[in-house]
Image (cartoon, rainbow, N blue to C red; front, side, top):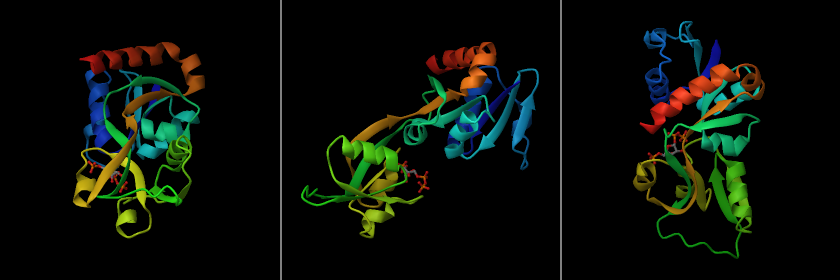
Length: 207
Ligand code: PRP
């Protein structure tokens, strides 16, 4: 039995549909209720829903053999896991955004609001730009509107949140999509089962 951590929410529904198409369905997961763990012995999978940003922790520590995490989380927290496959889902980009008409005065320290402090630090270090990081946990777009920061580093998917708040992308940082990740120890002692599921998923991703 493989333990698989799925990210709760919109991405999770798409990820589950992909696993189902690949032959790893689990009818119980569609029953209404508050249960978090679902098993299909025949398919050899036990799924559980976790907060998207927690998937990599479950996998790194071996509570899950496999999981699906966004590249944003993998870059930010650098968990010690194997990245097996780009699932091509949840495509979006990490970008720098600012109020329309923003001009960067390079003489001044740039105030950057973000959830992704490591990604932001690395990005600006690569540009030798001095920054002051403001670590927020959500609604990042508010920061430049209220003068808390000059720019934000955040995920842009449709661009609607930026548009509706009079912000615009200033620079792309990195493209993001969902990745299949594996616990390192599990990969060595369950490698046949893990390779099989990764291959079956790969077949579906290419279609
Ligand atoms: C994410 C991200 C942006 C928004 C981008 O927020 O932080 O705010 O989605 O999507 P869009 O380009 O399609 O508008 P999320 O919904 O995860 O909430 P958050 O405010 O807690 O970060």
